[in-house]
Image 1 (cartoon, rainbow, N blue to C red):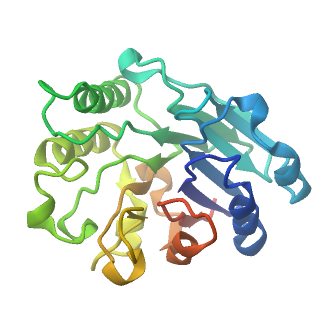
Image 2: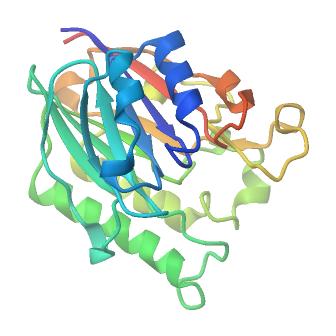
Image 3: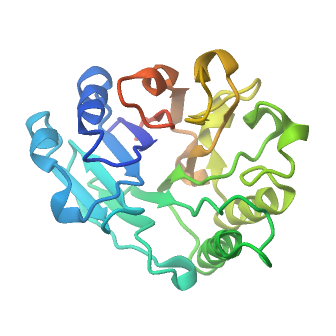
Length: 262
C-alpha cells in the first residue's frame, strides 16, 4: 500500500484552514501531519477536511498552544501519545495505518531565545524533552515506524542559511544538535529527507520577521521525516513545498513530503 505523507507546522489550524484545504486539494497526500494546531481537538475544522476525503483523524490538542493532528484519507487508528518531560503539553500523537505502519507526529519545544537552560527555562524544557524521547526509543525500540514533525532543530550545516552565524542561535546550537543526534540514534531512525536530498541547502522554515523571506532566503530545516531501518528503503520522492510559504496568510513553515512503497 504505497502512501504519500506530508508534515506541516500550520501555526493555527483554524486560522489557516483555507491553506490546509488548498494543500489537500492540490497535492493530495494520503496522510497530513500537522503541528502547532493551537486548538482543542473538538474545535479542529474536520468537516471541511472530510469533504475532501480526509475522514480520519487522530489528534491531541489544547486551547491556544501546541497541538498535533494526523489527517488521513486512509483508515488510521489512535496509537496513543507520550507526555515527554512531563510538560503537560499536546506535543505528540501516534497513529497506526492498516498496513501496520505507526506514524509518530511530534512538535518539539522551540526553546525560547537564549540557549542557556540556567537563564531560560524553555531551553531546558527542550533539552529535557529530547532526552526523554531518546530514553523512550532506547527502552522501546521502534519498528515499522515513521517519525515526522517540527523538531525545531536544523542539524546539518547546510540545513541553515549561515552555519557560523547560527551556532549560538536556538535551533542550531551544538548542544541541541547533539541531543537530536542521540534521539535519532536511539531509535535507529533514518533521515529520509536527507537520504533523498543529500546535498545542498535545504530549508522548511523562514521567519515572519523577514521583509521578503523569499529573496532573503534565510531559512532553516526544522521539519523532518524519519523512518525506522526496516521500512526506510521504501521511502522516496522527498520534497519541500517551498511555494506554500508564500500562500495567503501563510505559516512560517513549508510542508515536507515523502512517499513510502509499502
